[in-house]
Image (cartoon, rainbow, N blue to C red; front, top):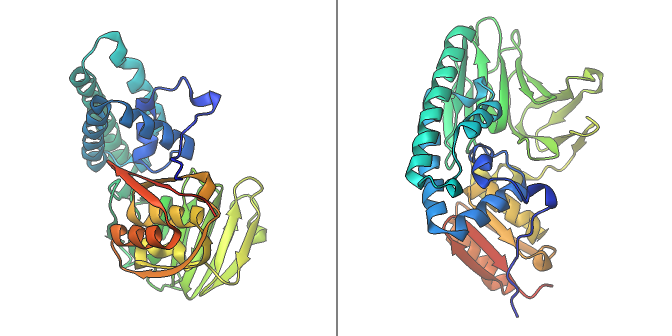
Length: 334
C-alpha cells in the first residue's frame, strides 16, 4: 500500500505568512520547511497559485533591473510586507499584487542606484533556468537557477575577485599574475586557471567545491591558515558551523549534474537522488520518508526528467504524482 507524504510544520512556521517566504523561494535560499509551507499554501486554493505565479513574474522582471546581489532583499521585503494589506483583511488578490508590484519598482530603483554608485556589477540566473556569463577576463561562468555573482569595476585588470550566492561552474582563464578569488559566505576559493564547481546555497549546512580540471585552493576567511589544495576529481567541503575544511579524494560528480547532464547513482539512497534531481531539473521533489533509504544503481545521460522518473518508478515500484511544479514520490518502503 502506498503512503502519500504529509507535510507537517514546526511550531516556528505555523504563524508565518507564506507570501513573506516567496523571495527566499525564488532566490533558492528557502529551507525545506519554508519551501514545504509555500507548496502547501499554493495547493490549498487556486487563487493562491495564481497569486504565486503573478508574483513570480514580477520578481523576475524586477531582478533584471535590480540585481539582488547588490541590495538586502530580506530587509526590503520586510518593508514591503509592512506596507501590504493581508488578503484576509478584505483586499482582492489583484490589489495585493498591485501593492507588491509597486514595492518591487522601489526595490528595482534602489538596486539601480546601488549599482550606479557602488561601481559593481551583478549577473543573476532566472529562478527556473541556467545562465551563462563571460567575465571581462575571459572566464566562463555557468550559473545554476537563482544564483548570483557580483564583482567590482576593473575586474580583470586590477583584480579578479567576486562574490557568489548559490551555485556556479567556473572555467577560469589562466593568469598567474592575477589570481581568481571567489567569496562564498565565509568560504574562499583561489585559483589561477582551472575548472570547478562551487555550491554555496545559504540553506545548506556546508559549501562544496568540486574540481574537474587543475588545482584549487580552498579555505575559510576566518582561518586562512587551514587552506587545503584540491586536485581534479576531488571535492572540498567547508562545514559552516565549525568552519572546518576537508576533502574527499573521490568527489561526487552528481554534484555538477545540473551542468553536465550526467547522473551516476551507485547504491544511492532515494533521499540523495531526490536532492540531485531537484538541483538538476529545478523542480521541487517531496518523498515519503519510508522510502528515503531505498537505494538505486542507475546512470542517466542528458535524459528528460519524465524519463528519469519513469525508470525510478519501475525500478523501485514507486508512485509518482505531479501537481503543478511539485513532484511527490511515495511507495511501500524497502
